Image (cartoon, rainbow, N blue to C red; front, top):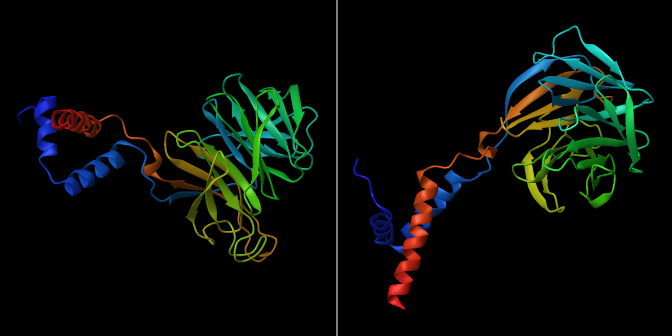
Length: 291
């Protein structure tokens, strides 16, 4: 195939009608950037009733009441338990790779605690969010996102300073952060079936400024009672913990459901991006000639 220089490529694009140029460029921009798709279930793993999951140091970690369990990729036994000194009601956790430590969230008090990988206590700060059930770490700056059942979402610096906050307007059972899209994925706890009902567990996306970006899946997607989200941006995979639903005692369920959305993974630079740039340059040159 004959190679085209910048000028000839721009001219060929500009020879098209305006509508055709807009259509082509819109499609190329979608290919070159992040285009929303849908999360599709790719795997479901039966595991003991861990509260939530966090990926770190090449392993999975699962929250326990007094610390965390460390498990392999298949979530197969045996599980190694690490007791976090001074913790008593841990519901959520995150791994801090910059300091090789665990970040734990106390459900009843909203206290955020930092522990060494041996369980030793390092430091803590208080959020005041009772029924705290969502925790996510931003790997870019170490800041933390915390949410609670009442729908409050707060952003804290690594040292515990409050940076921002908002209320999503719905009850929540989980939260995770997507650094690629700079957004939060939250699991709704009060869907059409009511709190804990058979039609809850809708997945919604919010910007970090609190703007509602829409619902990503409808209710009834999670069997049992969904909680504890973990998103892996490099793979476009969302892990959702599913536990026993107290309103459905005859249908106990404990599992980790894995969803994937390849449309959320940014594409590497391609000729499409170059074509968009060349077309823009060509349009600028044409306007200068006309002017």
